[in-house]
View 1 (cartoon, helix red, strand yellow):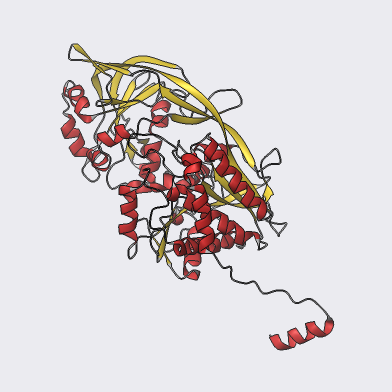
View 2 (cartoon, rainbow, N blue to C red):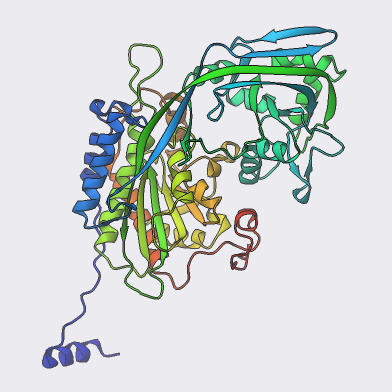
Amino acid sequence: MNVKLLVSALLLSGAAIPALAEEPVFDAQAVRAHVTFLADDLLEGRDTGSRGYDIAASYVASQFIALGLKPAAADGSFFQKLTVREARLDGAPKLALTYGGKETVLSDTAQLLVRPSLTDAKVSFEAPLVFAGFGFDRPDLGFNDYKGLDVKGKIVVVLTGFPKGTPSELGAHLNSDKAMMAMKRGAIGVISVPTIEDTARRPWDKRVAISDGPAKGWVGADGRAFSRTPGIKGGATLNPDAAAPLFAASGKPLAKILAEANRTGGKPKGFAMKARASLSYAQTWKDVVSENVVAMLPGSDPQVAGEFIAMTAHLDHIGVHGKGEDTLHNGAMDNASGVATMIEVARAVAKEKPRRSVMFAALTGEEGGLIGSDYLARNPVVKGEVTGLVNFDMPVLTYMFSDVVAFGAENSTMGKVVAEAATKAGIKLSPDPMPEEGLFTRSDHYRFVQQGVPAVFMMTGFEGPGEKAFRSFLKDHYHQPSDDLKLPFNWDAGALFAKVNYYTVMGLANGAERPKWYAGSFFGKEFAPKAAKAADPVK
């Protein structure tokens, strides 16, 4: 085509010349401004249901208004309100173990940790014990831990984690579903014993240190807290030292079982234990109202405007708690940096007219167990279908990164879009550098995955100084008061992270096809079995 002739003809005809799209410019100081506000001491750590969180929510809503986005909540506002229940133990729990002709009572946190119940003010039950290995009941996937076991009406004892050598995302998913699998087999309780690998990663004293917070969950219109496992009356985690005599009484040394579990491919076999247990504890409840901040940008193509691409980032942090001189957890990196990125991506997207609609959500209750995302995924606010989701959670912005990680990218056609976006931004897409953490199942996007939505969770990468910086943050600052504005933020890295996510979102919103699960993806088969699939990529 002769462009000069075309332009001349348009000028002579008086027709308007379509404006060429300009590359967006991402302002590092804008990212800094958002983080500075959201991580200020005045917001007191943005705990779910707190005044500080409400201030943060109003700030995000005001940004959405300034960008010209439309409110998405059912009441015409930017706030999808939900009730969140906080449950705290009322007194010490009591686990009585009967074996070898005697009863042993455990109640101290040095031996026993119990998660408060959100559905029953008092919990009390007794039953025989059955060991079920890792507690996986998926023969179709090669896991048959319940083979030959009768656990109906009983309490199952399981190891934490998953067999070594299991793909991390699959293992993390199955690990989070242990109570569900036990319930489907008829069990009424679950007792977990940490593996050698799990103890090395999270020693018992650290488990105790993070156990002082309340259990949290969302409450339905009927006044009951939502539970995926209503048949499980309760559960506990047992210190391996306290569990050893219990196993010994059944003639099965725990040390031998743990050693087998620590071997690649090791799957300790289950057995009926020569023991009974009774577990009792009480809790107090406090219900608070919080909100997801939700907005939308309508799509420009009527044929696909009902297909929404979602951007999510959790707005909450863990508030004020703990002991020591500083108990205020500002959450600058976790997740003020993610929310700041989302706002700046939204700013750039709002200036465009993407074919598909885009939903933006700053979510509550992530730290309490992906509460706000679960509520939003089960109670949609958009009049259409969320077809793909990009989640922003804790990008570590203390270094100029040269690669990004998109957890879940290999499961759907979204991975190709992220790779192209990274290349366009002058960086590259890298595989999961920490498969042992199972991060794909640990942030808000996963509640949408469980509803069949392809998703990626974006993180700054490990190339160059990345691994040292990221691991240093996890070791010294994650969920600590030191996650504040004193960290050596590289605000230019924040601008770059916004750029690669902008290209990702726009690639999805303007793509010829909606995101699709790959045919071989476990998550696509598990959660969207009837959805159209894309052919697996050639490796």
